[in-house]
Amino acid sequence: AGFRAEWAAVVALAVSPRAPRRLRERHERAAERYGVELVAPDLLEVTGLRHASPVPTSLLPGEPGGDTAPGSRGRPVRGRARRRPARVAGATAARVPAGRGIRVDDHVWLDATTLRTGITRELADHLGAGPVDLALPSPGTLHRTSDALARLTAAGAEPLTAWTPLTGAITRVNPDLADDPGLLLRDPEGDGWIATLQPTAWAEDAGGLEWGPRGAAAYRSSLDRPDPWAELRSTTLHVRSAADVLAELRRRRDAPRFADAAAVEEHLVAPLRAALAADPARARQLVRLRARVGFALSAPASTFVLDLTGSRPRVEGDGEDGPACDLTLHLPAELAERFLAGRLDVARALAGGEVTSSASRGRTLAALSVLTALPAIRPRVTNLPLFAG
Image 1 (cartoon, one colour):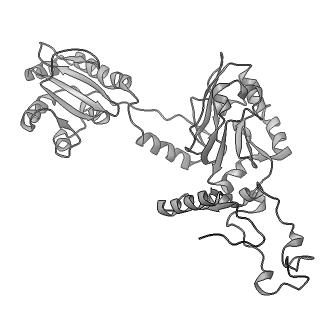
Image 2 (cartoon, rainbow, N blue to C red; image 1 turned 60 degrees about the vertical axis):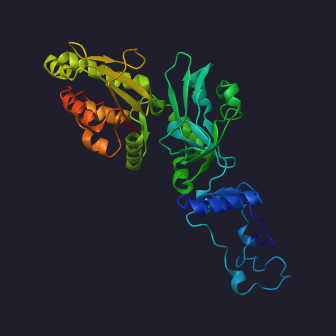
Image 3 (cartoon, rainbow, N blue to C red; image 1 turned 135 degrees about the horizontal axis):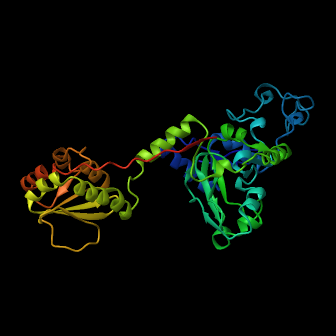
C-alpha cells in the first residue's frame, strides 16, 4: 500500500531469484510503481552504497556519543531504539568492496558503484590497434562466471573470450560498441565498457576479484607469467568448480543437437550415404520397398529423401528436387538421428505422437519394417574441453 520512513528513503526492494513467479511479479510491479530498483537480497547493501555512505558508528544507538536518536532532543534512547539496525543476512561491510575490482586471470574489471564491467587496458593492448570483431551478450540474459561476457577477435589474432566476472543478469550492453567496436580498444576501462550486471551471488563472487590498489598491483604482477592470456582461449570451457561442469553438461544436454540444416546434412544425410555405400547387402534389402520415403524434420527445419525405387538406395539432401514421396515421416532431427542409429522404437514413437506419417498407420509400419535394414550411422559425439580455473 505504500512506504513509511521518517528519516530514510527507500531506494531498492529485494526479492530472491528463487522466489515464486507470482511473488516476483508483485515485487516488480511495486518497484515500478515507486521508481526503485529490484535486486537480490545480497545486493541490498551494495545498492545502498551507490546512494550514500554508511552511517558512522558513532551515530548509531548504543555507541559512544551515539546514545540519542534524531528528534529525541537529548533524551536517552530506551527500549527498542537502542537496538542496532539489522543487517541483511550474508552482507557485511567486508563483502561490499568499493571502487574497482579485477578478476586477475580473466583480465576483466568490475566497478562496484556502477556495476559496469569490461576488459583491462592490458588486454586491449594485447589485441592490438584493431579492427576488432565483437560478439556481445544479450540484455536480460543470466550469466555465470563460466559464461562468456564477450568474444574478441582482432585482425590477425586468435579469438579470445572475456569471461563474466560475477554471476548475474546482463542489464545493459554498451550501445556505443555496436557503432564503434574500436572504442573497446581505445578506452577499455572508460567509455569502452561492455555491459552492466545485476549480480545474484554477490557475497560469493565478489571474493573472486582483487579490489582497489592491491588488486591493481596483483594484476600487474600476473602479467609476468609465461602466457597470461591462457584462460582466454576460446577453444576451452571456463570452469571454476564442479558445479560449473554440471551446469555446462546440463546446458549441452538441453541444447538442440543440430544448429541448422547444414548440421543435418553433415551429421545425418552424409553419414547415411556413407553407411549405405559401405554395406551393399543391406542396401539390396532396402530396395524391396520400391518407395520414396521422405523425412521432414523439425528443430531445425530440414528435409531429406531416401529413394528406394532404383537398383540402389539413393539419399537426396535438403533442396534436391525429385518425384513426390510415397510417405513422409515428420519428426525432430534428434529423433531422426536416433532412428538412423538404430536406437528408436518407432512404433512407440508413432503411438506417442512423437513421429507422425503422411500415410496410414498400416502402410507406415509396413515401410518401417523394411527400413529396419538400414545400416546404423554413428551418432554425433560432442567433446567437452575443460580448463580448470
